[in-house]
Image 1 (cartoon, rainbow, N blue to C red):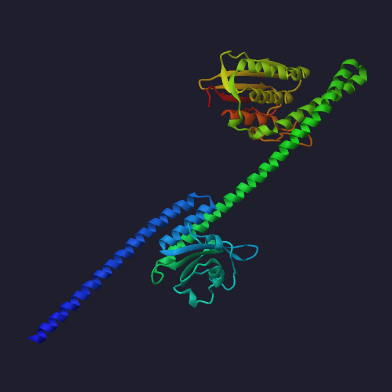
Image 2 (image 1 turned 180 degrees about the vertical axis):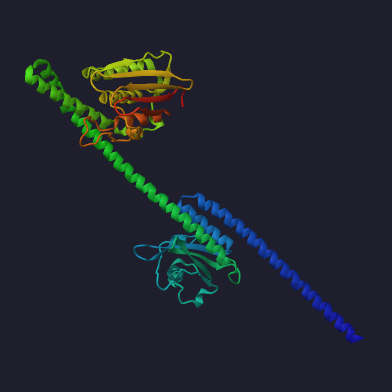
Length: 441
C-alpha cells in the first residue's frame, strides 16, 4: 500500500515537471515567434527608410540603431575600407553612443583584426567571447574605453566587391541566437545598396556642380568677349556706312563688302550673347499682357531692312487687336525675329515671306511661311538642335551659327508653347508655326 502511494506521488511529480517543461517550451516558442515578428517588422521599416534616403549620414544612423535593436545588442558599428590606404575606419556608431567620437578616429588594420578577416574572407564571424580570439584588435577597446565581450560581424557587399563590415557588439544574453546572423546580413545588404545609391547621387551632384562652374565660365567669357567686340565693331560699321554713302564705283563696292561682313559679325555676336537662352526656364520669364498686333509690328521693323535688301516681299497679317498672350515681350520678340530672319536667309531674292496669326480657342498660332529652299523631311526636327546646319558646313552658302531656331524653341517652350516646322520638300518653301497658350500657365 505504501509503495503504491509512493509510486503515485512520483508519477504526479513527474507529470508536474513535464507540464512545466512543456509550458516553458511553449512560452519559449511564443517568445521566439513574437521576437521574429517584431524583428521582421523592424526590417521592413528600415528597408523603407534606407531606400528613400539619399543621405549617407541618415543611412548609417538608421543602420546602427536598427542593428542594435533587432539583435538585442549593446552597440553596433560600420567599418569601411579606405581604397587608398587599405586601412579600416569606423564610420558610424548608434545614436548617443558615448565612444562614437573616439572610435571614428581609430584606424583598424586589415591584417590582425576581426573586421579585416570578415572583409578579406567575405564571411561572417560569430563570437560569444572575443577574449578567446587572437584576431580581436584590443587597441580599439583600450583607446575608446569600450569593452567588447561578444561580437557578430558580416561583410557589406556592393555588387561583387566587399567594402566593409557591419558588426553588432555585446549581445544582451548568454549567446547570439540562430536568426541573428540572418538579420544582420539582411541589414548589411540593404545598407550597401542604399550607400551605393547615395554615393552615386553625391558623384552626380559634384559633376553637376563642376558643369555649372564650367557653364558659368563659358557664359562669363561670352559676355566679356561680346562686350569687347561690340565697341570696335561699332566703329567699323560707322565708317563702313559713311564710306558706302560717300564713295563711288569700285571703292563703294569695297565699302559695301566691309559693311555686309560687319553686319554678319554683329549677328554672330548676337547669337553668342543669346546662348544663355538655350536653357531658359519658366521662372526666368518676365510675363506681361502682350498684344500680338503690336508685337508683329515690332518684328516687321526689325527685319524689314534685311528683307528689302534682298528684294523680298514681307507680308504681315492683321490679327485682331484684342488677341493677347501672357508672355515675356522681349524674349518673344527675339524668338519671332529669329524665325523670320531664318525665313529671309533661306528665301531667294524677290521671294515671298508671310506672317499670319490664327486665333484658336485655347491658343494662338503664329505662322511664318516662305517660298524658299524648303526643308528635307529628315531635318524637320533637326533644325531646332543647337548648331545644326542642313547644309554641309564646308560647302554651305548660308551663314550663321545655327542657334536662332534653337533659341526660339527654348523660349517658346519656356512659355509652355510649341514650335514646329512643315515643308513639302526641296525648293517648295517651309512654314514654321509657333503655338502659344492664351491664358497664364
